[in-house]
Image (cartoon, rainbow, N blue to C red; front, side, top):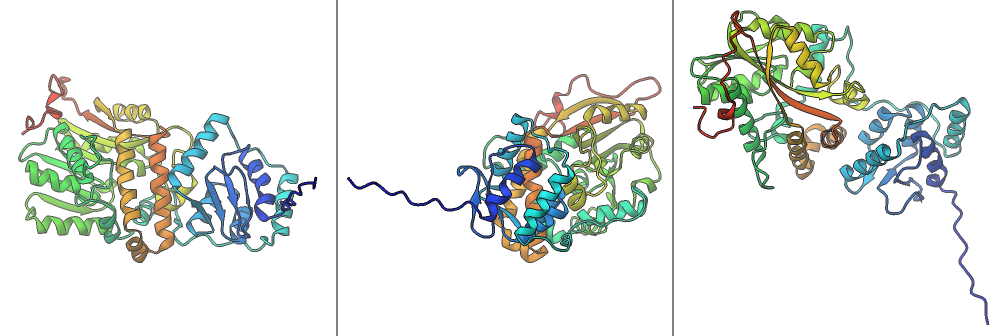
Amino acid sequence: MTATRTAPRTPRTGAAHRLYPLVEQFLGGRLPLRLRAWDGSAAGPEDAPVVVLRSRRALRRLVWQPDELGLAQAYITGEIDFEGDLADGLRTIWSAVRERGLRPPKLTVADRARAARTALSLGAVGPRPPAPAAQARLTGSPHSKARDRAAISHHYDLSNDFYALLLDETMAYSCGYWTSEAPDHAPADAQRDKLELICRKLDLRPGARLLDIGCGWGSLTLYAAQEFKVKVTAVTLAREQAEYVRARVEERGLEELVEVRHHDYRDITGGDYDAVSTIEMGEHVGDAEYPAFTATLHRMLRPGGRVLVQQMSRGTTAPGGGAFIESYIAPDMHMRPLGDTVALLESAGLEVRAVEAMREHYTRTIRAWHRTLEDRWDEFVALVGEQTARVWRLYMVGSALAFEERRMGVDQILAVRPRETGASGMPGTLRDWYTQGSAR
């Protein structure tokens, strides 16, 4: 009999094979991850999500910045990519990190030298690649008025056209309220249901005065004025938002009901409002400044008036959302546990009367935005460029997962400024908030 000859094994000397042990070392253990390098080599489990290093430049960037920000920069520039669904890939990796308790180890000088030698042998050593242009570059003291203006402008002044493409016709850039589980329930309906709920919680009635701090593109301002006939003072620090809201006010003939102010919340004067709203604006205030912010909410209200704070929450780890969010999306953002925010509102003299968790609603809201981004990808790229579009893809995918996995939360907090007698003016039950047609 003739012996069967087996084909010789291909030497595992490709870039992926040499890098994979370093990846495991830097990440603190084995992950369900497959690595494909620029030379066509691949290493890791064949059924795992595939991370693609498209060039030596990706490796060079990670040598200079071997952390979350370096990975994000490499993805934004297209030096690193995912094959298949990015959300599924990140979900698989996060799950493995949790289940195996993986933590990046403290790297020794020898570890770094070994990595540098590998990079050198692969021709990936060179000058530090520049950060993508979309990265925020703020100067000045944190949460000074000038720096806050720049931070808000970085995110919200990207362009009204961009947000009009991403959002639905309400232009509400905050968590929706999904009253139906139907897969075809429209994002615009979820936003209108959210606006209706806020107006009911604030007990808005014709002629009442509402202060909308951080009004965005005016979704609540316009809804409250048009549907509830209240007088609204809308405040935003973003120039393009102010221009947009003023145009919509004029277009709808609401000039007698709505005043738009383009300035810092710290410059708000007056008071005696029947209601105050601040929808996902408190995250931009800053930790040290938040007690003064809650004092402003209290000062603006008449006794018996209500305030509704819709705000994201996070644990003490990465209160700004992490290096990627802080550098590319919302610089100087600060989130805290829900209980801490409630305590700060109470310390300002407000009485918290209701808290409604909406975490799952945000997962669904963000996924709707992400679908729009992917469905109209070429339009987004033409409008803001591919790198900025990739920033937003990573932001949408990562944020939806953070809410899904309870690494972030979002809540509506309703508080009142009690009268001297202690009277709150709250109804005995809250059923009217959720019963169709009962509020008006």
